[in-house]
Length: 257
Image (cartoon, rainbow, N blue to C red; front, side, top):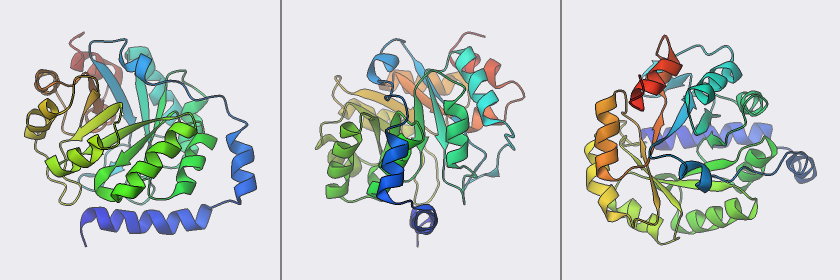
């Protein structure tokens, strides 16, 4: 069993334990404000940052306690982040939907629910807790699920980042004509990181699609590498949550400090 398979197994178990009735989740979903559009947010800057609230990871273990996710998200927003990514997977990343609720109550920019979306219920759940964006990991779902989940995301008024790691996954992603594709430098099956994934895959993506560089970005040189490959957005977690001054680190990544 790969690392990804193990994570998904846990996600299924945890989802079964917290699933509400369809009436309850729909009532919650329709009580939240409409999702904030993502495209115009990302196009407003030459380089946008998706800053992550992330306590731990399968590859590095505990990264940060993060007693107050909302306060951290507010620091990100003040420092210039365009989007806040909130990990909601519990077992490997130490996240929760409570973190999502907390961050949503504090910031005004779009929020990405960062999780392994493998069941239709999770999309209603994401919207009910105020998410504006979800992540669809091509390696974690079938081609038909990718198509159906993408359509569901749009129907619920949210945006989706389609995450890929290989050329084959990119081809599958392009088949659904997405607006945003994320290139993950981390292989989710082995957890190895190779920033060369940016330069090998991004040139294959049409210019009309927004390109996000994910994982392995910890210094300004990494941002420049991603930018030169074609990225206009970076997703950063570990470098920020491990920093003694996350706001300063974010500005430094953007070349502002």
